[in-house]
Image (tube, rainbow, N blue to C red; front, top):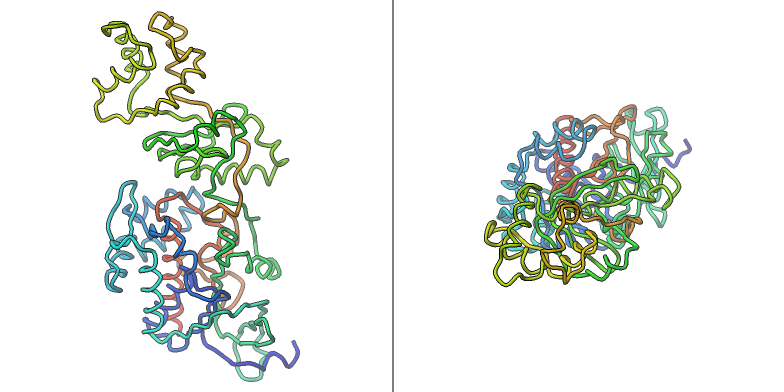
Length: 449
């Protein structure tokens, strides 16, 4: 290392990225007694992605208990996240925001929002917290590279540190460095994968990034024609060409001009994107489908009884009218599909939309029940990073201590937030992971300050 290593200002803690994880870590480290915290952000403001989240409402955490929340990230990530979710539980996170002047409220599907319904309040609270605790925030500071400095290569100190180079030629030496630069979802918010080449250069285990929580594409014309139709309570299964189930979610579904969206579909999109990358692109998901159970709380036997009862309705109405009548009588709280969706159910069952109860042979009844319990939506891909809410992939979890988020084998380096190979379903879970990783990191920084 040349003499450059002794140039530039020397700082105790430098955090790269002022998103959810980075701003939380900066605030909490300073609040816990770290006197010198520098937070660098390449965009003109802190928390840009926070402002865009949850339809500008910011679903900031979940109502679930720590272990229940962690379990939704999948087996490996669940084991990794349990410690940090216990360090900063969703309930404790809400209490912190209450102290910062942002009361929260619980919403359906285990969601938590600021009571004001404004993501700006969450962002502003974090900005104020960093300012009040003495964190130095530098905006429009684009870091171009990081590199380790061995103790023998720095004349001013006898510990390993990090050289941070900023666009324009400025350099900073960090005694301790935290990477919180995010993934590549929402690239317009500044998350453009800046940290990936740094991790690769350090020789750390790395999982190639793919988009997650993205709308799913379908090439079927009838799917596009249903754009704007939605189902609030539907169970969706993702099946490969051999019929193997690859994932299942019970969440709302929305039909769009390109396919399907809503939490039910988006939660399953990461599996599609990962397979397309690891295989032969679109060819690798040929024959894949989503199967939508439009009435998850009504059994097949109960549906059979409904269809039989339609035959006794006065006036012998067409099936498309009679079936909803009987369903409403027996299940008054059941959400029924729109008329347009009913038509597609009939099409899949091979029935004309004008068919009467006489058309319900035993075979036709079976086909109609199967269409209601598993409407088939062919899959052709996802809308990619531009529409993805999070990134799947990043620094391999085996490279990080789950209690402190220190990088193994690298002195004085921490990685937090979306830069890690951690992604969960919609519902405030990814923010919970970002904040919890920032909390665990901050406590470790304070402990060793």
